[in-house]
Image (cartoon, rainbow, N blue to C red; front, side):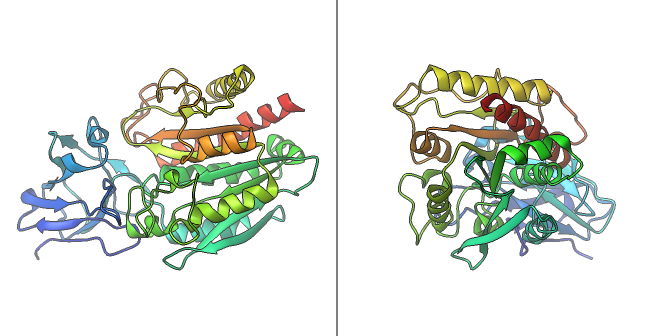
Length: 377
C-alpha cells in the first residue's frame, strides 16, 4: 500500500509536493492568511510503518524565523498524547526530518499541538470549580467563541490579574502552560493558590487566536492579523480578539499582566518587560527585576541572562500587548517566552521543551505571582 500524508484536520498544515517513496517525501509549509508568516507544520503520515522515512520541507528557509530551525528537532507521536523528538536537520534552505515509524499512522509537528477540542475541555474542566465563571467576549471571524475565564471573586480590595495566552496560534506551549497554571490555581488544597485568590481575581484568556489555531497558522488570525501588533488600534472587524479583551480590561482595570508565548529561536525561558514605554522609571524596573528573580528562584527552567534586547524609554511598540498594557494601566506587564527547542540550561534531550514542562512552568508562576502579591500587601 502506498504511503500518504494528510493535514486536513484541526491545526494541520502541510502541502505535499511529492511522496512517491518513503525516503524522498517532499513537503511545503502553507502560509498563514495574509501570506506574511509561515513556520508551523503539523501532518499525519500513513502506511509507512517500518520504512526509513525522509521528509523534506523544501521551503523551510523561507519561513518567518529560519534560525528557529537551527539545532531544532521535530516532534512525533503515534498516540497524540506522548510526543518524542526525532532526528531533524536544517541546511539553511530545507528542513529534513528522518524517522522510521513503528505503526501505520504517525503525526509530526513543529511542537506538540493543542487542539480546539482540548481547549473546549479545558474550559469545561475549569467550570467544575465554583471559583470560575466563563464568558464569550465575542464570536471570532471563523465562528468560534472567544472565551474569558474569571477565577475568584471580583472585589474592590482584590488585585486584577490578566493572563493572555497564545496570541500567536502556533505557540502551543502557551496553552499547555495554561493547563498547569489552572490545575494549580483551582486546587482547593493548595495553600498558595488559596492565598493568591484571597488577594486577587484572575482574568484568563486561554487562547487569544482560536481561528489561527484551527487553521494551522503560526502568528495570524483568520484575517491575517498578527494579534500582538493590534493592541494600539484594534479593529472590531479584523482583530476582534484583541478589541473585546481591551474593552473588558478597561472595565476591570489591570494591576498585573502576563502574556504567554513561545519563541522560535532562543533556547531559553525568559521574560520581556515593558522597559521601552515612555512612563518607565526606576521603581518599575525594580518591580520587574524582582519578579524575574522570584521566578528564577522557584523554577530552575527559568533564567534571566538571555532574552530580548531591552529598548530605551520611549522606544516601545504600543501595538504589542505588554507595552500597551504597561503604558495604559501603569502596571507590571510582561511577556513570558518558552522555547520550541530545549532549555539550554536544563536540557532533556528525549523531549526537549514539552507540554509537561510547559505545565510545570505554569504551576511555578503561581508561586511567583503569589509572592509578588505578598510584596504589595
